Amino acid sequence: MDVVVNERLDPEVFRMQRSEVLSSWPTGQEVDLEEAFEFHRSLPKSKVFTQKLRESEEKGITLVQPRAGVAVLDKHIELLTYLQDEGEADLLPTTIDSYTRQNRYNEAQEGLEESKRSGRSMLNGFPAVNYGVAACRRIVDALKVPVQVRHGTPDARLLAEITLGAGFTSFEGGGISYNVPYAKDVPISLSIAHWQYVDRLCGLYEEAGAPINREPFGPLTGTLVPPAISHAVGIIEALLAAEQGVKSITVGYGQLGNLIQDVAAVQTLRTLTREYLDRFGYGDVHLTTVFHQWMGGFPQDEARAFGVIAWGAAAAALSHATKVITKSPHEAIGIPTKEANAAGLRTSKQVIAMLRDQRLPESEELVTERDMIVRLTRAIIERTLEMGDGDIARGTVKAFEAGTIDVPFAPSRYNLGKVMPVRDDSGAVRFLDFGNLPVPSEVREFNDAALARRGKHEGRDPGFQMVVDDIYAIGKGMLVGRPRR
Image 1: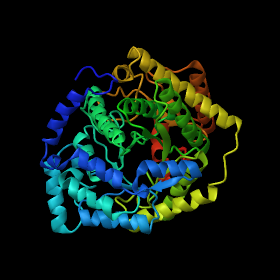
Image 2 (image 1 turned 180 degrees about the vertical axis):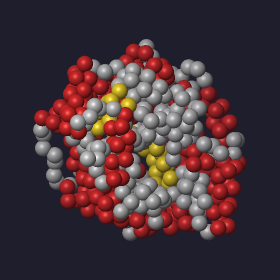
Image 3 (image 1 turned 60 degrees about the horizontal axis):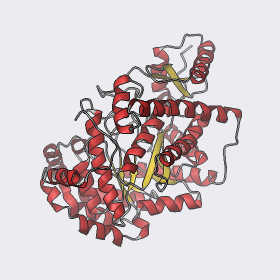
Image 4 (image 1 turned 45 degrees about the vertical axis):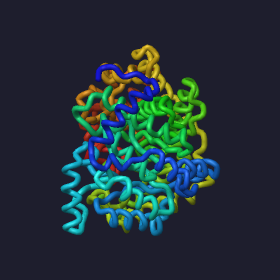
């Protein structure tokens, strides 16, 4: 596919595509849209993601949600029930396995069968497509709180059909955020088109009185991604989803570690996304935010890991994010036990509860940080619109080709990869190299001055070694990767 435009899918085109999608794997034949609509309408409000998010906004509460998923259905339900009851999770995930993310369902089936034989998960998530609608619905039936699908799939059409048909009420990802950080050879125009199908499917549920929450994946590669880049991607994916009829969108941001920058980022993400949704006629979209706790390397020591988790919870609370995606003290080791996962949830809940009525005071640093994020984000979005002659989908493809959108450390060959992030002396993430981003002069001057201060403090010129040091710093007990003396 060479050309993609931001227009609502034609019903006949959608119908023809849907026939192909549902016939691509046997469980696709289980999907009955009308029956699924009816099931969603019958769900109690306590199990509907959009309802829970609205209640959170009204009460000013930051909700907590873990990551979790294992291969065997009963074990998966047992895990989620434990996180609900012992971890006190407000929202629950079903994290999908890597084979399913790449549409490799035969290999997912092999992993599922081996998991059943061995009694332990041989997949790093739940193979929902292989299970099908009826089995997946057991998850929804067994739990008391809403469940979201979390994955990393460039082509999530069949996964969306099956999980939404089963009663899941939120679906994460997008044509950029679940392509560029996850895949090497998938054209961006193709993944955007595939996600237009997903969003149109969600739009059909919305029109049937069965609202589905959609959540672009904010952290992207999760490695020192400057806020303006992740903001731009989130805004674009929000606009693409809204055009297909989605009415509940949660835009996200991955923690970087500097409190001022993290709070400014969540504040500007909400403001800018609302601005662009309203500008293009999507004023009826209910907008919420999600803060992802630190996505990089963790300390191996559990006590130190809890410190990282608590810091992420504090930043989420002080930024007044609608929800926070939590981490566990086993991040440096591998897949956490259910007990460790629940401990991360409870740690986060405790900190959030203590900070619920507190706000980070306005300061010159906070105002300046917001201003720098807004200036660069707007510059990226406006250049993207210009390149697409006003069409955000067409412009996005061209922007990635030109590097005016560029995600650090992404594997995709459709991502230019010239941007290089680095921390300044206070730990805020800046740019060692802006690549081809359309950078306002004020942003460039602010950035370069911040890096010069760090260089002077450390007695070295800003360079790639700083980047390497910063990537490993938190795992070693620091935020800024200082040189050893």
